[in-house]
Structure formats: C-alpha cells, structure tokens
Length: 144
Image (cartoon, rainbow, N blue to C red):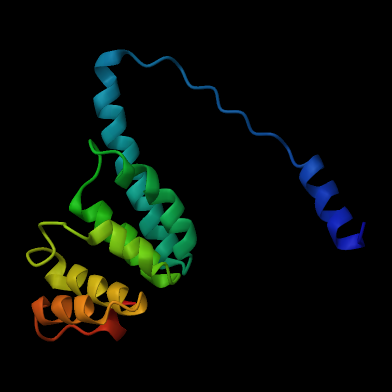
C-alpha cells in the first residue's frame, strides 16, 4: 500500500465520530421544521457557491429540490446555477426543463442557463429556441 493511501486510511480511521442526537419533534412541528431546514440548506448552498464550491452547493441543495413540498423556484435556480459552475449541464437541463417561471423570475437567467445546457449537450436547435426566448441583454458567458 503506497504511503499516501496508508496515511489517508489512518487519518480517516482516527477521525472523531460525530453523532448528533436530536430530541423527538412533535408531529405539529414537522412542517415548520421542514421549512426552517430548507432555509438553512439554501443559505448553506448559497454560502458554498459564494466561496467557489459549486459541487458542495449542489450536494446541499439536492434534498430540497427533490422534495416536491420544499421545491421552490429559488431553490431550483440556485441548484441549476451551482450545477452550471461545475459543468453539470445535463443536471441544469434536468432541473430547469419545463419550469413555468423561466421567463418571469431571475431576470430570465434560467432560460439562458437552459440554452447553454442544450448547447453543451449538442442540442443546437433546442439551444437556439431557448436563446431566442431569453430576455435580451443576457449572455451565456455571464451565466456559467
């Protein structure tokens, strides 16, 4: 076993285990807790993106956008922006395709991300359709 792998194995084995024990939450508080957790995950993802850690931001925001009760346009746009920053263009397309708010929220930047996603996947005609639908003044370079 090479020395680097051995030292990594030892470091992982000796790392302290952090257990988190949560008190029982009554059923009536679950909805409020879910909303607060979504907010804290969104803030953590925004912070990670601001620090230049788009992959971490994507991982943090994924549980929010995959849960229909917590999925909001803001969360989806943040997830798509994070994915665009690490080159996850198929993920950007999956997140944004079919969203009804693309042209009305975030100054149309979601539409530009969708156009870039299609272009990166080789779907030129789809990219052109999204680019033409995007508000003027937005360009792919400023969006990822």
